[in-house]
Image (cartoon, rainbow, N blue to C red; front, top):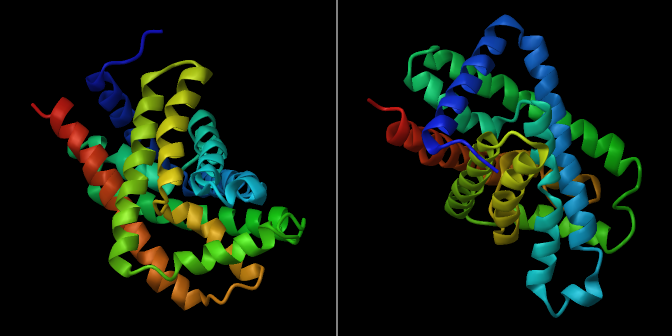
Length: 263
C-alpha cells in the first residue's frame, strides 16, 4: 500500500488546519457540535478500555502489564472515530493547525479560538456521554469497575504537577503522531492502523490526555471518588492540557513544519 511522504503528510495537515480555521470563523456552531461528538468518541474509548482493562482481575493481579495492554488495545477506537468521521478534537488540533498557521494561511488568533471552542465542546461531549451513557446506564456500578473508576480518578489527581505535565507531553506526542500516520493513508484500514499503534502506546505507558481525563475523572467523582472539581482542575486538567499543547503543537506540528515545509 502506497502512503504519503512526510512532506505530503505535513501539506495535508496544513490543508486540514486551514479548513478547521475557516470552520471556526464561518460556523462556530458546527465546530462546537463536531467537538461535542469528539468528546463523546474519546469517552467511548475510555469506558471500553476500562471495561476490558479492569474486567479480568484474576489475570491482571499478577500481570500488571496485561491490564495496561488490554486498556491500550481498546482505547484507540475513540481517535479512529474522530479521524475517520472528521470530528474536532482539541489535542489533535494542537498539531494540525500549526502548519497552516506557520504558512500564514490564517491568523494565530484563529488557531487559539479553535482550540478554545473545541476544548469546551470536547468537555461538554465527554461529560454528557459519561453521565448519560455510562453512569446512568450503570456500566460501572458493580465491581471491579466501580472500584477501578474511583481508583483511577484519585490516582490522576494525586500525582505531582510536573509529572502530569510531562505525561501530558508524552500523551499528545503519541496522539498527534497517530493523526500524522492517519493522514498518510487513504483506506479505512490504513487510517485505523495509524491511529491505533501510537494511542495504544500512550495508554499502556500511562501518559495523561486531558480529553480522556474529562471522562475518567468525572466518572470517578460520580462513583464516589474523593476528588473535588477544583482539585481536578488544578492538579490534572491544567498541567495535562499544557503538556498536551507542548506535545502536539511543538513536538509534532512545529517540528514537522520546520522539517518538511520550511523553505
